[in-house]
Every structure is written in C-alpha cells, then in structure tokens.
Image 1 (cartoon, rainbow, N blue to C red):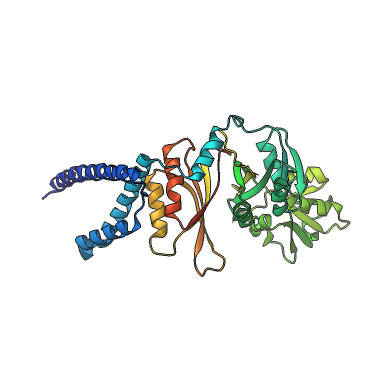
Image 2: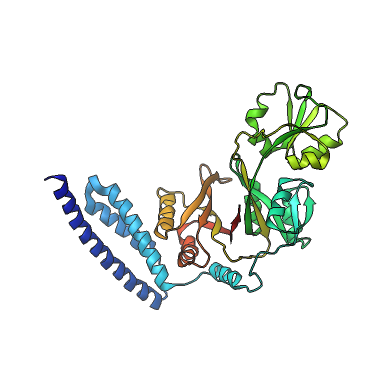
Length: 381
C-alpha cells in the first residue's frame, strides 16, 4: 500500500474513533445525570482503577503504556464533561463567586494605605506606585511585618515580590501566603535595573564591601565575580543598602540598588546595569486579608501537593489540558519532613467568569492531596 492508501485507512479509523468517542461521552453524560439524581460524586476511584487495568490487559504488552496514556486523558475529559453537567460548586467556588459579584469592586482602587518592606526607594515601593495612582506607603522591616500590618488593620494592602526572572520564586512569601490565608488581588511586573552606588569620589578599586539584598546579589553574580577581595554583605533591602552607604562615614563601601536610590540618597552611580541579564524582571503581588477579585481577573495562583505515586503530576496536567487551561508557571519545591516529595506552585490562565474556571476549582480537591487557592487577579506590565 502506498502512503495515500495508508492515510485513507487512518482517516476511516479516525471517523470510527470519533463516533465511538461521542457515544462514550454521551453515556458519560447519562452517568452524570444518574450521579446527580443519586447525590454521587463525579470521581469513582475504584471504577477508574478497574477500567485502566482492563484496557491495559486488552491492549497487550506492546500497546499497554500507550493505551494507559490515552485512557487517562479520556477519563479526564469524561470527568470534566460530567462536572460541567452536574455543576456542584464547592464552598470555595461559592466564596469566589461572591467576590466576583461584589458591586463595590468594579475597579481596582487608585489610592490606599499599603505596606512595603524596606525604606523609601525600595523596588516594592516602585511597584506599589505602578499599582496605585496615589498610595500612602507604610514601610516595614520584613516580609512578615507586611502581613502583620495588613492583619492588624494598619493598612489595607501589602506589596511583595513573588518571583524574579533570574533568581526564581520568593519562597518565604509563598509560605506566608499559604499560612496566613491571604489573597493576591493584583500583580505587576517591574523591570529591575541594578546599579553599583557609591559616595561621590569613590573608585571601583577602592571598594572593600558591597551591601544589597540577597536576591539582588544573586541577580548580579557575574558582575560581583569580577571583583577580587570585595566582601558581599546581604541586608534587608536594596534601598536599605543604599541608605547604609549614604549614612556611612566610609568611602570604601558600595550598594547594589536602583538608580532612583542614587538620586534619593545623594549617591553616585559607579556602574550601571550590573545584573546578569538585561531582561531582569520581578513580579510583585498586591495582597489582602480579604478575598477581592476585580474585573479582568484572568490569572490564578495555586499551591498544590500531590499523592506520592507514579502519574500523579501527569494526571493533574491532563486535567488542565482537558479543561483547555494554559499553565503559566509550574515550579516544584521540596516538602519539609517528607523525603523527595514536592509541593508545586502553579499559575494558570483562565477567566474567573469561564466555565473551565468553575470546573478547575471543582475538580482540584479530587485531583490533589491538598491545594491552596492564592487568588485570581490581572497583571499590570
């Protein structure tokens, strides 16, 4: 047989497969209606396991793995279709729906009292000024203090870094979000340009110590490796580093900080753009103790843990694929006290108004060992 004949055979088989798939989905819909009438859950683990074992036996050794992959996807599509029919919103989705329907949140506020870590000139404060037109910024000395200030009602929001394009996620912020049950209400992406700041007259060869935040130090590793005999000292914040240099009586110290801090603290920019990558961006989140969702929210952040067994992550990814939800971020992190087991950070793209968002929130409890919903929001660039 030539290639055209073989392709005609494939086309004929595909027609049969599609018709059989439609029949299967129609039967799945009938089952969904039965489950709804009898108050049964969509997921039946024992039935799913039994079916996968059966098709594996039928397929034979040569095709077993391929068949299991195919049917895992078919089962995810079937569950997604059944969830759409049954439409049994979880308590979390009802809470989200209430936040979406809140008429007082037709647009993100232009002014608010906002907590930021650091001092005047910190990147968090620059991000805050991009998020709010006229913010009143309360500076605190740590990420924990940002959460504390919002919890105590001293301010309405907090702005914190969550991820850098070079150094990765800020795990401490994720931990605090999960522990204290805060929500992300907005996000902004800020281009980070680090400069080496000194007092006027200081030369590069004079420098003995450089201060900066550990993330900025990591982002400028290539530049710092060219400086022999210079001590690198981490501090709370890049703006704090600039202020330390300005307040010091020494002329042999420098800070890796922003150009804004040079003007703010009367320092000189000795070297510009010392970060390793020109396209160095940090995402900053605006957090609230209350769940707030504003029009245009099309990104959702999640923290997930999965059963420690083969195929657990694949099955979760199959669920997102079946729902046609784009994954913007997937990052693993070791779980404390559990050898070689991981938690996952997910950012996904789905409008809070869409059916697929409802299905995702409804299916996640069954698809994961545990999960935390960190909020749905839009991102400002």
